[in-house]
Image 1 (tube, rainbow, N blue to C red):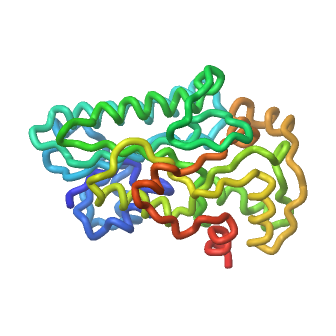
Image 2: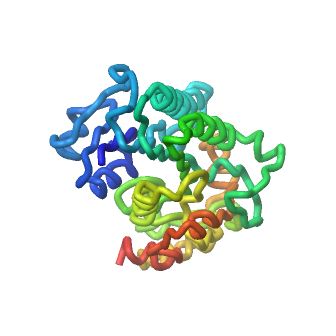
Image 3: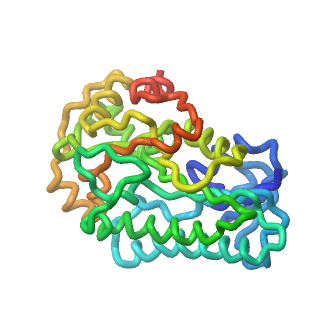
Length: 300
């Protein structure tokens, strides 16, 4: 299968490329030479989509491109970068797909559980009806248009799958890697009330979900990319401390995060309990369905 992958050099993309390395891969990355040293010179590399007039040569597209949402404080410029890096490339891919005489059969695009906004203690799935307050949140607005641009690639010839990704657990990157130094020193603890939902997924399960959607033609539409057992922040903290054999009882107050991070602190203070209803109904099986099994696999 000939597959175009955007965002291939990121935390998720790197592992996905390794999983799909038996296919013919074209990788879109801002730094092709640097990325080739890590992912292999046998892949084909692009630094932009400018040289493409259509997607006729590809069997599938996997779209992961986007500025990390928690990399920097949400200044006006950073918000624009977060939005533009997702919306623009997704729109370009959809336009190229429409211009194709023989378009890819499969178009898989990332999104995030931030689509749902803050949902308190309510457990939600792909059918959740959002309140006006949730729709007004920045994370929802980012994801909503991101998904709308991806859906424009849908046609009788192309099925579109969108994965709303939760907190991805991997020891070598992502949010968990940022937490580890404090937890390894015994300085970790619950954030704010500790009752906010954390919808998580082991990195290997997420990669398997991408592969599942790629090879199963009956799949299309929205899928929650998170394990079937979301936990509270307090439960997550306790499980991570246990997996590292460290205490995890030093609380992080909400006001301190708001001072340090501004609006971006909502990613940590608010949350969602998201269930992968359609993901399970369409036949995907999680290897790591509990937080203890996922963290123990990473650290023990």
